[in-house]
Length: 285
Image 1: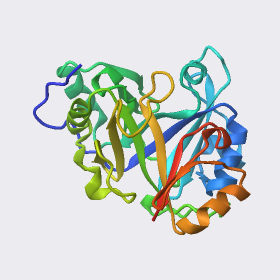
Image 2: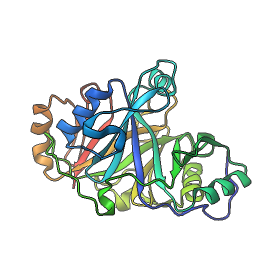
Image 3: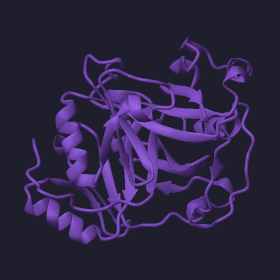
């Protein structure tokens, strides 16, 4: 459903988090720590590394992965929101969120222009725009600030993973209509589009568009394009991570027990079955 807006409804700041749905939350926390060097953020509910915050029939862990916060979502109820998501889509990126300056104004502008709003939580201060307005992508607005976010001057004790990661480059997305998705991100999140060939660290990708939102990038590709369609109804395909030493990457992955699905001199894709079921791409910094 197209959004009939003449100007963006907000100007996002930092990416608030990338949310991954995973089958085994404690194992996923250990994997992100040990393999990718992620660090638990000092959220009160997860003091001393405990993961206790219930959400949507599951539990969450909030971590810092080199350049962006991530949230790991585990299911405790098979009929809960996360349990149903995992049954339909498998482990994958479940949603993306950005910090915005005024979520009340943004919500009212979206509603006034015919957009359906879902997942409103006043206590958590967030809401989602319905995926039918964003070509299937589940995107969240929030004015909440994560405790311990290093981008706000907080120190995070670095952790050395077995695979050296320097940054999270982007989330890759498969959408049914590329032009409609670009337009949707322009008006809902003030997304700025550029040809992937102009900005991609891994070279030109025909039929792909990079959209910058706040401090983060979402790469859009159309169904039938360079990326295979993801399982189930989810549109988020994969996450691209940058490494400082691309030549050393295969040995680091092998030592961590991670298989390689395909590789060339600029990009490497892992075997999802050896990486919690997640689709991950590595490129040089």
